Image (cartoon, rainbow, N blue to C red; front, top):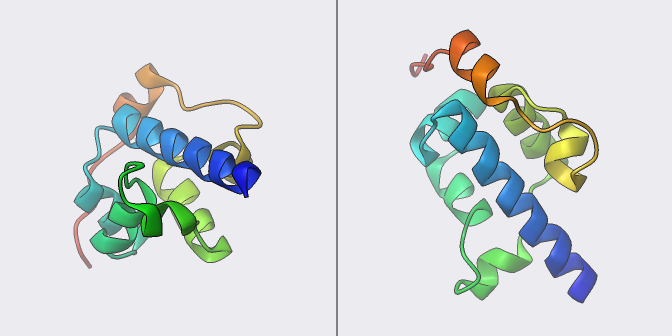
Length: 99
Protein backbone atom coordinates (compact mmCIF):
# COMPACT_ATOMS: atom_id res chain seq x y z
CA UNK A 1 0.00 0.00 0.00
CA UNK A 2 2.85 2.38 0.77
CA UNK A 3 4.28 1.98 -2.74
CA UNK A 4 0.91 2.91 -4.24
CA UNK A 5 0.60 6.00 -2.04
CA UNK A 6 4.16 7.04 -2.87
CA UNK A 7 3.42 6.62 -6.58
CA UNK A 8 0.26 8.71 -6.27
CA UNK A 9 2.09 11.40 -4.29
CA UNK A 10 4.73 11.54 -7.02
CA UNK A 11 2.05 11.80 -9.69
CA UNK A 12 0.32 14.60 -7.75
CA UNK A 13 3.58 16.54 -7.47
CA UNK A 14 4.42 16.08 -11.16
CA UNK A 15 0.91 17.11 -12.21
CA UNK A 16 1.14 20.25 -10.08
CA UNK A 17 4.60 21.01 -11.50
CA UNK A 18 3.38 20.66 -15.10
CA UNK A 19 0.42 22.91 -14.29
CA UNK A 20 2.73 25.49 -12.72
CA UNK A 21 5.09 25.45 -15.70
CA UNK A 22 2.16 26.07 -18.04
CA UNK A 23 0.67 28.67 -15.72
CA UNK A 24 -2.55 26.65 -15.58
CA UNK A 25 -5.03 26.66 -12.74
CA UNK A 26 -7.10 23.55 -12.03
CA UNK A 27 -9.86 24.99 -14.21
CA UNK A 28 -7.45 25.74 -17.07
CA UNK A 29 -6.10 22.19 -16.86
CA UNK A 30 -9.59 20.74 -16.81
CA UNK A 31 -10.58 22.73 -19.87
CA UNK A 32 -7.42 21.86 -21.80
CA UNK A 33 -7.72 18.15 -20.97
CA UNK A 34 -11.52 18.02 -21.40
CA UNK A 35 -11.93 16.72 -17.85
CA UNK A 36 -13.94 18.10 -14.95
CA UNK A 37 -12.40 20.54 -12.52
CA UNK A 38 -13.41 18.15 -9.75
CA UNK A 39 -11.35 15.38 -11.36
CA UNK A 40 -8.28 17.64 -11.42
CA UNK A 41 -8.97 18.73 -7.84
CA UNK A 42 -9.03 15.11 -6.68
CA UNK A 43 -5.79 14.37 -8.52
CA UNK A 44 -3.85 17.22 -6.92
CA UNK A 45 -5.52 16.88 -3.50
CA UNK A 46 -3.17 17.26 -0.54
CA UNK A 47 -2.50 14.45 1.89
CA UNK A 48 -5.28 15.66 4.17
CA UNK A 49 -7.89 14.15 1.85
CA UNK A 50 -7.43 10.37 2.25
CA UNK A 51 -10.07 9.41 -0.32
CA UNK A 52 -8.45 11.57 -2.97
CA UNK A 53 -5.04 10.09 -2.17
CA UNK A 54 -6.32 6.61 -2.91
CA UNK A 55 -7.63 7.66 -6.30
CA UNK A 56 -5.26 7.73 -9.19
CA UNK A 57 -5.90 8.83 -12.73
CA UNK A 58 -7.42 6.41 -15.17
CA UNK A 59 -5.39 5.71 -18.29
CA UNK A 60 -7.56 7.88 -20.55
CA UNK A 61 -7.28 10.75 -18.03
CA UNK A 62 -3.50 10.40 -17.89
CA UNK A 63 -3.27 10.60 -21.69
CA UNK A 64 -5.55 13.66 -21.83
CA UNK A 65 -3.54 15.40 -19.10
CA UNK A 66 -0.22 14.64 -20.75
CA UNK A 67 -1.45 15.98 -24.08
CA UNK A 68 -2.96 19.11 -22.53
CA UNK A 69 0.15 19.87 -20.49
CA UNK A 70 2.59 18.91 -23.28
CA UNK A 71 4.44 16.31 -21.22
CA UNK A 72 5.18 12.64 -21.75
CA UNK A 73 2.64 10.29 -20.14
CA UNK A 74 5.53 8.27 -18.66
CA UNK A 75 6.94 11.32 -16.94
CA UNK A 76 3.56 12.33 -15.57
CA UNK A 77 2.75 8.83 -14.32
CA UNK A 78 6.15 7.61 -13.13
CA UNK A 79 8.68 10.41 -13.42
CA UNK A 80 10.58 8.72 -16.26
CA UNK A 81 11.78 10.94 -19.07
CA UNK A 82 12.11 14.69 -19.29
CA UNK A 83 10.11 17.12 -17.14
CA UNK A 84 8.46 20.12 -18.79
CA UNK A 85 10.72 23.04 -19.63
CA UNK A 86 9.76 26.39 -18.19
CA UNK A 87 10.94 28.67 -20.99
CA UNK A 88 9.48 26.77 -23.96
CA UNK A 89 6.19 26.05 -22.23
CA UNK A 90 5.20 29.68 -21.86
CA UNK A 91 6.36 30.62 -25.36
CA UNK A 92 4.49 27.82 -27.13
CA UNK A 93 1.37 27.65 -25.04
CA UNK A 94 -2.00 29.35 -25.12
CA UNK A 95 -5.06 29.08 -22.94
CA UNK A 96 -7.83 26.95 -24.34
CA UNK A 97 -11.44 28.01 -24.39
CA UNK A 98 -14.43 25.77 -23.93
CA UNK A 99 -15.60 24.51 -27.30
